[in-house]
Length: 241
Image 1 (cartoon, rainbow, N blue to C red):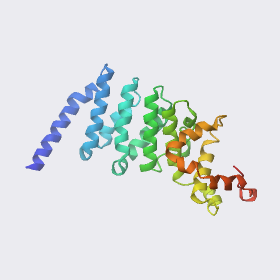
Image 2 (image 1 turned 30 degrees about the horizontal axis):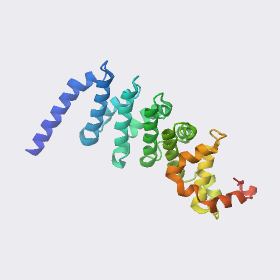
Image 3 (image 1 turned 60 degrees about the horizontal axis):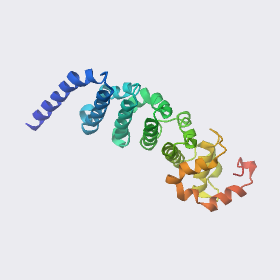
Image 4 (image 1 turned 180 degrees about the vertical axis):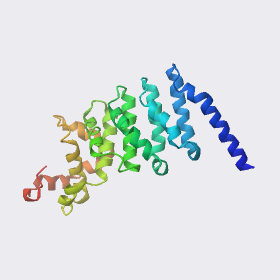
């Protein structure tokens, strides 16, 4: 009987979806479109067995292109609720491959609040889908540590810190593996190599401010800084800070 009731509920929800949502998610009133995206996100999050499929996710992906910021914002927030869950994120591979380019491009959204939430979304992707974002994708986010918006710069700082904390890639890791600075040096060098080449900025304090909230203790690791500043082994490909 319980299974029968479950099937009836799912049938009713599908009828509502096809009879109401499919027509209203493109409504001329942006508030209605935003409401549709918010509720779709709730359905997918709370009934993943039935709605966490590409047949429903595609509506979130398509609406990332909506001309109204409030609608795009609801899409991003709905996706955040999914990408922050390891199990749910594992089922988003196809969606990610289809819409990742759009999500990355939205870090430059004209609406500051949307751009902020997108950076938070990409940070979640780093943590639950480590291979989803390429270095090229990440380079679109790094320059945001220098923007004048404190909230956006801080979110970008979290992204950089999360990316750097996952380890220094390739040759860089080998170069510093045996260094006396240990993990602290690895992190500092990774941050410097990631951010500095992207956009040299005359106000280095911007970078420090953006990282302070998430990496304050690392930024006060004076022993590591001293080791880096005294480093003089160019033969091993290492240069002084």
